[in-house]
Amino acid sequence: MVDHIVDPNLLAVIQSLKPYMNRQALQCTEVAETLLEVLASEQAQRVQEKLQNLRTEYKQTIQTARLKQKAAGKSDK
Image (cartoon, rainbow, N blue to C red; front, side, top):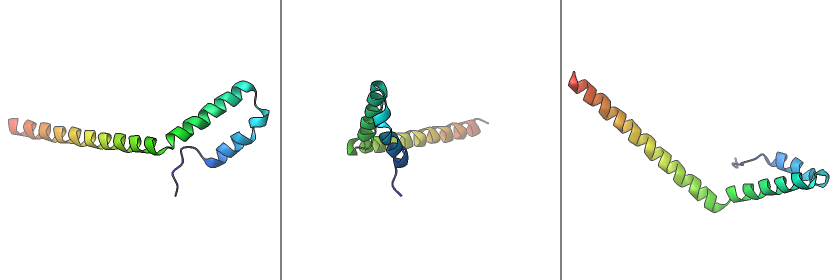
């Protein structure tokens, strides 16, 4: 299954409405489409992976610190 940021069917509907949009709505739609292209780029995917790795490392660090805290608390008793 392909991972999409936005359902392609929704994009098709929005694109089909473009001829009926006023200038501001059309500009907003074009900005959103460009943003989706940027987010789907290879560079953005790499950034997402690196952020996920940082999050995983952070969670492991927190978990380790909590385990050490519990162990220190038990040894105090």
